[in-house]
Length: 269
Image (cartoon, rainbow, N blue to C red; front, side, top):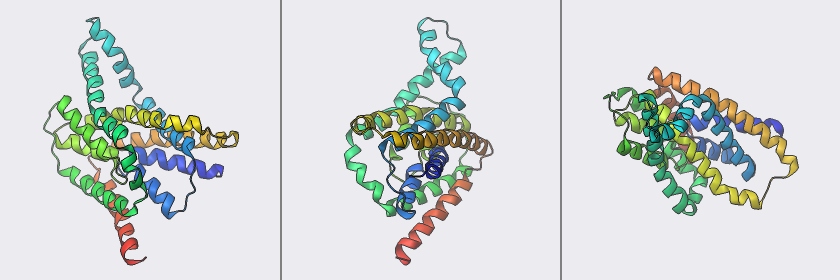
């Protein structure tokens, strides 16, 4: 693997991890259609950790408040802001539970679906449709709570299907529930942290058994930095798009890619 290729893969991972166009779907398509070679487990893990860094940088103020909030509540010195972030700690835990169930109990069952291009195209089509529907969803000024967090977490767990966007599914679900779209977007990004960490932990055993060679370290570092930088700008871009309620543009993109893939599959092969 060349250095330029590692950087390109890092940029693709960072952009597609947060933009509602499905990172898993694009990685499957890239591997199958562009004949990408297997980059190795360590490379994949560190690309995801790069996106984790970008989330932590963008939401550093929220995350620091969420870390301080439990102690402040226990000591009964939490103000309204810290109390709200204490509840966000609880909501993130609740929202993560469905992904934990899928990761622990269905990991082997779903491994084979990541080679199914037809499934990718169909799920990209679904992602496109739900993004096209977002301008027609009206905010009902409801507050985030545990049942709503659990439903958003179920959407995140469903996004294990390649082509079904994690950010798109969770934001769409939160909007359907009546939440403020920017609030649910921020919650979606923050709740991705335990999901990314959990996925890395699940793969860490294999990484320990098969550590990367010294010649791969530069490539891993380049891909990780590229993933973190592109992920940072992807988050900023998506927050701006959400404020303008223009998520449908990502829907057009997903429908275009899905349509091209389906036409190629059924008519050109």
